[in-house]
Image 1 (tube, rainbow, N blue to C red):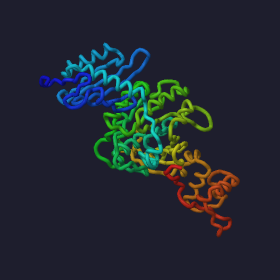
Image 2: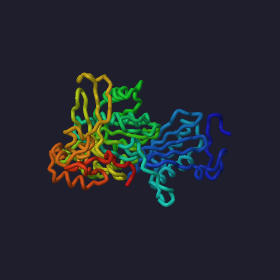
Image 3: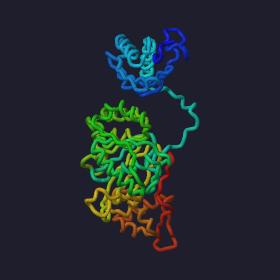
Image 4: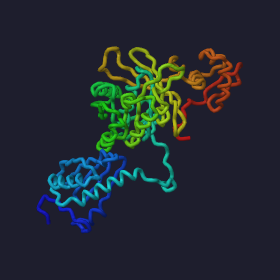
Length: 436
């Protein structure tokens, strides 16, 4: 037996005190550049894996029960000298004797796992597909990138902070419901400070009648997200993060917003995180219809896209409209309205922020962005009306209103007992949340 505190590695082909030889027993787990393995009492994690023409490097972190303090080293896994140095470090740092076979098996296993990439899955073996999952029903689908874009000052960050609180604590508020369990959310911020975001979240938290502090995780972004993907994967793993808010796209990309290649690399990095992401973005300048700033790949790569617009409300309040512009796996929602009440005084940055649901169709500045169908539905929510009445309220011609009413018989009905006939709304135009 080795001296107390030392861990003796078996030589090639031998059976160790608790199992077979390293080469046959060391199983590498993980994916996307983060791998782990346990051999007897020795646990290791490999991350920051980089392969190029001259080297295949990884950062290894080792722990044992006798030595719980992590021992970390960078190693070129194709260099004999590098592997020898790693084995010597394990002997000095953890008291492992003759760790050469272990280091060789570890390096070969990590390189093989990393090179193999994601496994192929036979879809007919995975069972019945589950229903579409939501992080925040009905606005945010789970495990996918969602993009919210709009002009500055339209409440994007405030809305994102509110959504982050609901997801963190599993709450339901103002018509949006989390899963009731909650889970860690990371606010990855390129525009403000921890104090700024913390202040907004605290005001929102207390505006929902909650005590204490919000509890959402915060990280100040300074480098391009694609360059920090390894570190973010570790944060996701170590903190059990279920959702990330990226505020905003320009800071996270730090490259050409109009380059499909650069934007593609950004979304590729997001995909390695294996969690849902909310991306806040600005708009293109000019043009009749506003789109996300930069390449069309921002639109194409996001699985869901919302445009946000805002109008000042009564007192110190802001009415925010979310227009569901794209949905890959379900029907688009009708416009979603929120009212943020910031307190009585305009210069008060400490009072509670109260959030409530509101009807976008009754706010003229926001109703202008709606389809004719949604604008007509907004009028009929208030009661029956003739074609002429609807046209007058909306400033449309009767030749536009009449065919729109007839085009949606499941939404609009006609009361022929009156002259002229009056139209009514069968039900609020809430699109179903299930996939097509």
